[in-house]
Image (tube, rainbow, N blue to C red; front, side, top):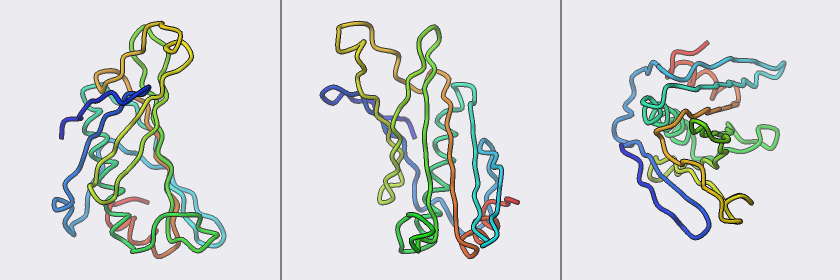
Length: 166
């Protein structure tokens, strides 16, 4: 479960994954994601989690996010999308790396439902294009991660049961 690091053109990228087979049907207790929940009058439920663990727990946090997203993709054959357009669920995943003594570095996170991997990529900013020092890009610095999920009543019931959530 160690991230692979690579440089591609004018960006840096890395990937961390989760094994599909390890998911099972039992309940899972989340250790690093702590969701706040809201529900609208039509029964659509939104869960929002913000996590900023010590750097040594970053791989565990990404592993936990991958578990949640693997489960969600397996819940229905339908891809995530706007609930008002008929999708069962949707999500938004973002992160910012905070290297010590440097400016925060926003990264784009992407989840691959086929491999169960989360990858992230940092585009070079204007400072780097002008030859200045590139920020540290690794899991060895503090990372702020946000995960927002929303779902229909059926998705919400199953999600709550799987992850022991309110």
